[in-house]
Image (cartoon, rainbow, N blue to C red):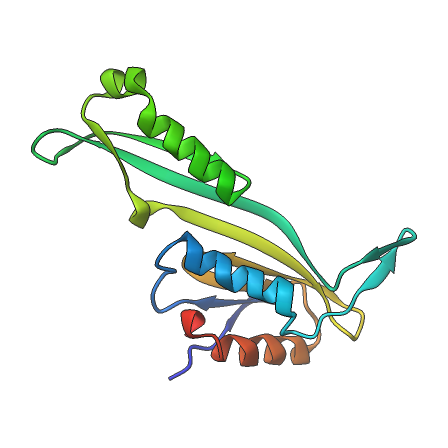
Length: 168
């Protein structure tokens, strides 16, 4: 059974809550990159201020890694969080935190990545053939379509999402 987007406000926002969150950053990024590379929504390039803009462009991104500090019994004794604007930045920062012996001594316990608590957000701006520009925001737990007016945009996004196993 497909999961539908549900309009949440009069400002034309629809959200699809995923039945299961993305399992990891690779699965998340694969879906986001597939929209950019394959343009399954049929977005079109346009000119703005004399510059050609691709039909789908990446907007704001936020990636947060969680590190738990565990004692010898596996009990959580501390935590660290790092946020970056890229996956590479988040990964490098998390690795640096985990390798920091001074921080390890200060917090106590052994650092372990808490992948299940990581969060991701990537925003894509899309230009519909009808001239509307809308936003598609992916998080670990949902996909949000905002700033659209034409119902056909919602139908197109919903049809695409229905065909993507990670979104159903």
